[in-house]
Each structure stands twice: as C-alpha cells, then as structure tokens.
Length: 404
Image 1 (cartoon, rainbow, N blue to C red):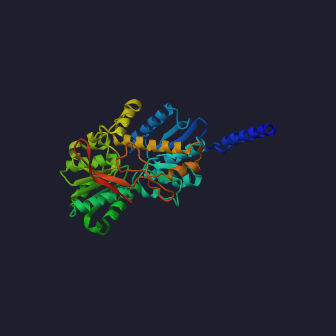
Image 2 (spheres, one colour; image 1 turned 135 degrees about the horizontal axis):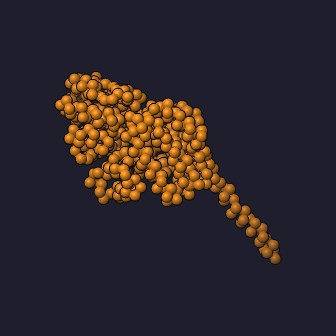
Image 3 (cartoon, helix red, strand yellow; image 1 turned 30 degrees about the vertical axis):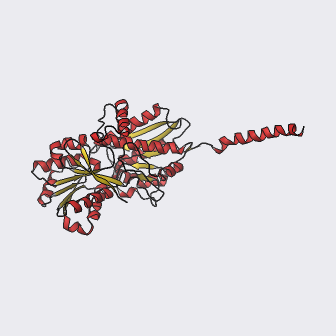
C-alpha cells in the first residue's frame, strides 16, 4: 500500500524531468532568424571593373538554393540577399546598412574587396554583426583584437607573396623582379608581402614597382615601364582584368619574363583565355583548391560531387572556372557553421563556431589544405601550393607550403 501511494509522485517526478528537456534546449535567435528562416546578406560587384567576380556570388546563391531544396539547415531555409555594389565603397556602405538595419540579416557573408570591406569595417564591428569569410586576402581582416566581428577565409595576399618570394629566391636567385599592383589597400598589401618575402634581398632583387588605378582602362603604359627596368621576372598581383591585360601586353611587346600571378586571378576562362592561352604557357601561381580541369582529379569523389552539383544546380556556369570552386567551398563553409549553431542562432554563437574551427576539410580543397581558426587566429587557410599553367590547365608543383 505504501508503494502504491508513492507511485503518483514518481510519475510527477518523471514527467517534470522529461518536460524540463525543452527548457534546457530552448531556442535562441538573433536578427534574421525564425523557426523557418535564416537571413544572410552580401554586397558584391555584379557590375563595374570587378564584375567578373560575380560568378562567385551566383554560385553561392545556387548552393544555398540546393540546401533549401533539401530541407534547409536544421529545418530552416536560407534567405540569401546579395546586392550589387559595383566595387564602389560608398555603395557597399549603403548596401550593408540596408542589410543590417532594414533586412535585419543574421550575418554578412563573403563581401568582396579590400576597399569595400574597409569601408564597412568600423560599422559592422560597432554593430556587432558577423562579417564572415570576407572575399579578400588583405591581412587587416584577421585582427580579432580590434575587429572581432570580421574574419577572412582565403590565404592572405601577404602569405601568397611570401610563397612567391621564397620560390624565386630558391629557383631564380639572380632574378630582377618587376611588380605590378593596384593602387589601393589590397595592392599595397600585396606589395608589402613581396617586400617582406624578399626581406634583406628586396633592394637587390626588386627592380621596379609600379601601380595603376582601378579605373584605368588598361595597364599598357605600366607594363612598358616595367619592361624598361630590365626585369626578367614579372610579378602581377592584380585582379582578373588587369592581369589578363598585363600578360597580353607583355607578349605583344616581346617581353618574356617569368610571370607570376595571384590565385585571385588564376581563372582560365576569365583571365588566361582573354590574355591568350599561348601567352600564358608557363605562368606560375598558387592554389589551395582542386582544379576540376585537372585529369588527376577525374576519379576524386569531391570533384565528382562538385561536377554533379554544377550540372544540376548551376548548369550555365563553367565548372572548371576556379571562381565557381571558390563560391562552392565558401558556401559549404557557411552552411557548416550555421549547422553547428543548432538552435542557438545568435550572432554571438555564430562567431563562436566560426572562431573555433579545427582542421576542417571540404571536398574541393586540395589535400593538405585545412581550415583552422581560434579566438586569436582569424586566418582560416594558411597553406598553398605552387602551380604552373601548361597551356590548357594548371599543374601542381611540389608540396603544400604552410604560411604559419
């Protein structure tokens, strides 16, 4: 009888413990998040001098659409609001204010450009809005002490130029180097990386440094001046349009230096074809992703999945364009971070996930390339590999080099 009298209390206790579960796992949402939606925003150059990069944003939109078609992220659909800024910093500021104050996005994603991200840097950090995986390799966007809400994704320009400098010192020790760079924060970051990479040898090895304005119609005059320096190595640190122009002009005037180009301009379709494939044979660059045009990857599972995605979700785009590989991989990274947030979709928790990545691998990253961050390390990818263009595709050279 005593046992019978205690049973109701036992049921009450069990019920109380069970009912406490939802309270312990209570949902927590920041701006732009509901039970069915996650809003993320972007400002990108669909027009203007860097409109070639718009392939990246279109690829990301296709990837988010795919995710939504599969049920979304933990049951929530991604609303991706991507606005054109024409690579104009004032327009970027206008777009970002709209995204934050009117659209009330949870976070910004892969905003492209050094001057554009510089223009919004103070604003987003004051507003405590995550500006994630910015599409620029400028070192300034890896400063957790002063700008804890802004973080990059790709290797920095400084790291890449250091890889170039070490390669030149080892393989071309008597080289005279000419440097072409854009006259903005990004270009100056490239130049600083070149100088630091050569270190005490910079005065001996750098023959000339010439800049151009992003609004200049061509870089022809700069290439002529660099040729006149007597350089036999041409280091082109510029975006796609200027890079294609520089390679073509060098060939047109009969200048045949060893050419190095940044990975930001390594697209075969958007850079090397306009430059003339015959003019690009032997060009050197760096990479950290698998090249879908490389037959060495034809049986790779990650590449096969990527190509299947392209056929189904972005069929009008060129699958071997490395801008599409970049868009695919950055979108995968963003989706993974949102998944890890679970039902705690606040800006604070999203930054915790983003700044605590450990040796993440994604299907289209090259072997040995991993994404790692910490609250004091805002540089997710710090490894690269040299590669050479053979007239049709990029061929990897040597081992993956760490920039740490």
